[in-house]
Image 1 (cartoon, helix red, strand yellow):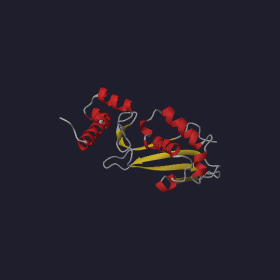
Image 2 (cartoon, rainbow, N blue to C red):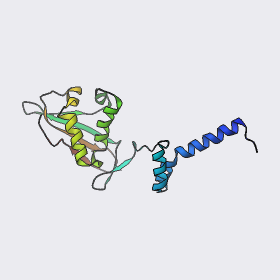
Image 3 (spheres, rainbow, N blue to C red):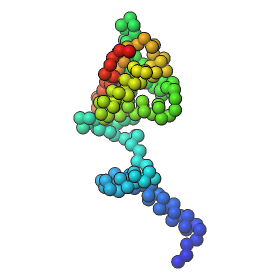
Image 4 (tube, one colour):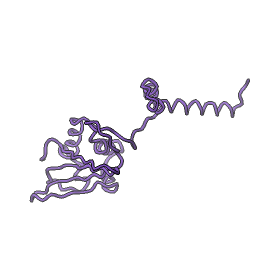
Length: 168
């Protein structure tokens, strides 16, 4: 049987859809092999942006239902805070890839290995530490920390992230 151009196009679309779904289907049916093939092909995206992650101690949390606040201390010793809203986050300079790293370290903070989280926060907040000034925080501010509070119903999870050096 000879296929028409239209039928060939439809068949190709079905094959591309099937191939592009391998990583997600592999995850859903708990097949590491299928998931791995899909991921290795780079043709099967498997985004876990709007999902649950697991903390280092095994608790589930939702990465997209949290409020973030950065706290810092002024020279006179008073503590100030700033909610990290989409409007504030837009003040970060540079390409998407740079801003995305900081967003991922915050959203996935409880799941990341502590050395990775601390190193990234130290780089962002302390040395070279350009993020505070981009957000309008005084250069003289010290004792930076970020608090993440879950808004997931029926939970009251919160986490505090600090670079392991607390002054500039």
